[in-house]
Image 1 (tube, rainbow, N blue to C red):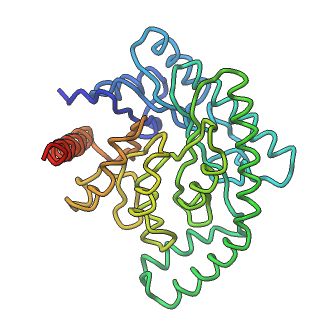
Image 2: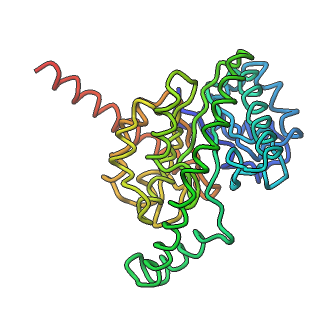
Image 3: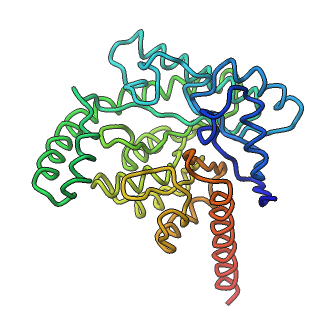
Length: 324
């Protein structure tokens, strides 16, 4: 019997490839002690046929949905795309329509948030993949890595202002229409796992700051932040904690080297570093484990026990300090 996970949610990315029915997929997650799920972007209309009755019966809650939802096969509207930053107006409008469709589903299911991959600075090839290969083979300090990193950074910086403006315009339109339609959900712009993708934490802070009052905040993906920090894109711990008041949701997982979606503490065996993110998890309105299929139920449960126990300890210490 696994621990009751209470307010914590669990992404369907963990077991979606193992199931042919939505019901079987959700039942397996419920067996881990979770009461709610995040429906990720690979959930199809076919899977929803057996998930929706479970939601209607109250067997499972939905904390969040991950755009583009339900699944869209067109890579232009997949998770690694220019999406809300398209210069081509018909494609950008389509991206906006699909994000609003995700919000409509989130509203229908009683979810609090929609996870959004806003876009990227486009490159001719996957320079992130090339950088990670050099990182593994020669190291971050190697001349080959530093030269290619500088090339990536210069191009990223040259295009980021333009694409950030397009993304913000799209998000403003989405937020306005969502509020007009009464969807009542937050949009969380997610920290990404490729160095040319948007937003960085600084870029997220800039958009959120300029859209005060909108149902928009940061969806903080802890593992992705760790990865980008290791590659050299930003100071993850400092910048993420500085945005703690703007976090609308969090993806809980750990990066081992540059491999993400592992159980915190368990797979890295680093029993201190992940503590840097516990305050963010504690404060986050939506808390979702986003783990890879290789994580076992026992590892997931043990990781959850460590996280919740450490958060409880921190709360108690803060309470005692305030009483002194």
